[in-house]
Amino acid sequence: MTPPVLETGRLRLRGLVPADAPAIAALAGDPAVAATTLRVPHPYPPETALRFIEGQRQLFETGQGVAYAVEEKAEGCLCGCVGLGRDEEHHHAELGYWIGVRWWGRGYATEAARLVIAWGFAHLRLHRITARHFASNPASGRVLEKLGMRREGLLREHYFKEGRGFEDAVLYGLLLGDWVRQAQAAP
Image 1 (tube, rainbow, N blue to C red):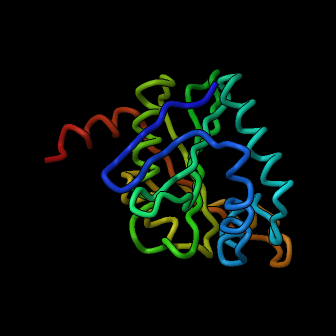
Image 2 (image 1 turned 90 degrees about the horizontal axis):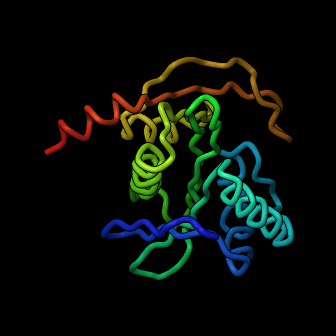
């Protein structure tokens, strides 16, 4: 069982497959990308990427999450990942994403995350979607703000990032009602 394909004019989001492991390892394992994420190691061996893909498949099958490969249509290649980790009992999920360095600054993270948020609210009956980013990565905060998420707090020295020590985490949230109002206000 795989998640449904989601598309925009520029991007195609599809379920992860084992053949994605080398690209995920190379792109996410880039030191610049790994430094902005909590759980992506550097170096990132393909075997670790395979375990990640299998874990995401299991989470989708049990209703605990969804992860997508983000493909750029023009090049037909994987350029990142985006997903939701679901807490069914409380009707919320946490958004996570990364985009390969080569594609930074093109709006792909915002575009892909917007699709996944819309799908999550529509199909998972979510009430709330949250996201966190390292305070040292303000670009991720700008992505979340473009999605209409609100900054809700700062978790001081919340994460320990290997090689850097403790990192502050900035927390954002988006309620279903806010999402609906934004959609209605859009031209």
